Length: 316
Image 1 (cartoon, rainbow, N blue to C red):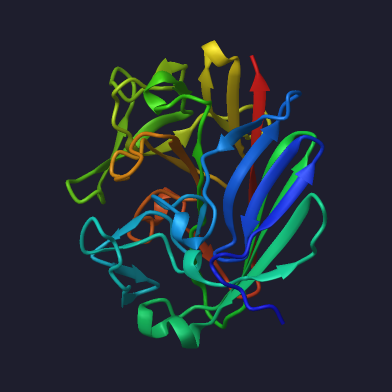
Image 2: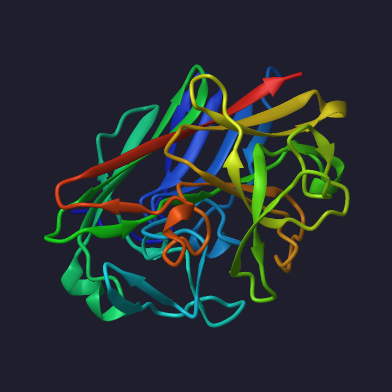
C-alpha cells in the first residue's frame, strides 16, 4: 500500500488539457491547457507539493464549508462543539478532510476517484459523531474538467452534511483586478467582522455586490457567500471570469446540488494577494450548521448525496 503524503500528485490528461490532483485532501492543485505553441495556459491558480499551498487552494470542504461561529451548532436537539481551527478567529472552518490522506480508486489517464471514510468514533470528540463514506472524482473531457462528489451516511443516525470546493481561477492577469466576473447570486449572506454570518440574507439588487452581469472586479474586496442562485432551464448555475484583452473566459457551472457560491479575492494571502479569484461551489451557505434552511443536507442512514460542477475555458 502506497503511503500518501502531501507531496504525492497525479497528472490527468485529455488532448491539450492537464489537471494535477492529489490524494492528500483529494485536492485540485492545477488545471491548465497547452496551446499550439506549447505554452501552458493556467485556468486554476495552482501549486506543487504540500508546502506550496496558499489560501486553501484546491481544498475539498467536507462535512461543512465555510465558518461555524465559535464551533458551536445544534442538530436534532443535541448541542455539539467543533474544534476552532480558523486563523481569523475562534471559529471552526472548512471541515475535516482537506488535510487527510484519501484512498486512490479507479485511475485512468483522464480521470481518478479518491475515497475517504469519516467514522463517528474518531470524530465524536471533535464534535461530529457521524459516519460518512465520501468520494470525489476528477474527470477531464471534451467539455472541460468535471468534479463530482458523493457522500453516503454509513452510520446509525442522521447526519448534517455540507460540501464545498475551493479552487482559484486566473485568466492570465497579474492581479485579478484587471478581470471581469459574473456571479449568479441574487443575494448574499451578511458577515460580521469575524467573517461569520449574522443570520441576515441581503438582496444584491441596487448594491455594489450585484454581479449578475459581467462587471470589472477593480479594487472590490470579495469575501462573500452568494445564495439564491439564478439557474438555467436545466437547473444549472454558472459563475464566470473573463479578460477581454486576452480573449479568455472561464465558466464554473454548478448542478442543482449547489445552492451557494463563495467569492474571494485573496486579499489576505501574504505573498501573492489578489493573484486569482476563488469561486467556491458550496452545497450550503457558510454556517449552515446553525442555519439549516441555507441548504444544509440532513442525510439519513443509508442515504447518498451527490453533485458535480464543471470548469470550462471559452475563447471569446
